[in-house]
Image (cartoon, rainbow, N blue to C red; front, side):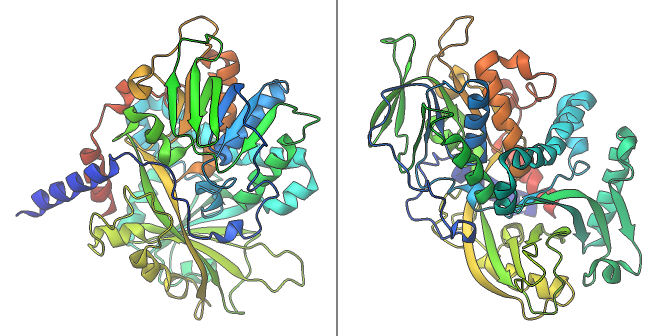
Length: 502
């Protein structure tokens, strides 16, 4: 069998796995360090479910909580329920790497090919706006939220250890800055013999620097949840954890509440439903199977030796190799006397996949089993710091966990109205947009530069229609349309993905 035939066969098997119904989240996930101090509402349930609601939000990650927050800022009287299969914010938001980092140059050419120059620019401006929006948010919520969330602006370092990969990205940066000349001082290319000395790396060939953010996402979302749970301000919000949605039924019995949501705790009638379930969205929206699929990621908390520099308040890292990359943040100094030196490091899966260290069934692609670790990825992560960053010898893993990300057929989120072809439930007609399903999911491992404002966008669409957000939101580019989602097969997507990796 030729290498090309083997790769096609391998990608076909991956695509079959990734196209399966993702089901509901497993009940006993690995223990993520970010959630080691559970939020006060982590396991909250009302005594009884609301029988009818204006809006049901499925999922309590950053997108779902953002949707609720923005709905209630405009209409505090709305009857809104948040339904979560496990504990509050226990999915990807509570398991990720702690980055809010956008590399706008990386996929700019791909975005132009998909959407044209103006569409690509709209997508990038939207993603670049997230950090400012989050900083503004914690400013509104107060000093406690700022302290708990550890939200900070940092220098984002994309460090390259492969010359060919670095040469390709340099060209991407130059092409990007041709269309965004106003950002020429923000995104800088560094190379030369002093790279390691300048950036504290080992055997790096070059580096791209630019603005980024870092945070404790679970606690940031927790601070927002605390705010919206204030019954004096928002009397009709209910938060229902450990309440998985088993099924959605379209009914003609109640034109004001055309959807029946079934859960183990009873049924709820809803006017609107917003799907914020990311990797699991295809479970309730069967038309997304093979279009939006899960990939499991491996995360670790590692303790660095005393000599490792404490840069968590100033820097975050992406370490790029010949196969894939790892992502690194560091705990910010809590005070001048703090001795903590924790490093949060994730990645490793692409190298394990491309180099044949795992079989298709054991691969992270298509897996929702965040109750399991990935031994191959862990083996790579165990030595990353000491091999790639100065003064890292002796760094050791003290916590390890997995999380499930949602990826899409074209590597861009899906945000907007859900058509019948996707839900297999006929939408209600009418100029008021009553009785619709909506989605904000599929963030492709880049949730923190998409989720918060996607939640705002979907909230405004529900209340005022898509026209109300066209000035700032990529409505057409992120649309949940069969035309967009049918442009590529999953086999072609995986072949392209692996080709780019090698």
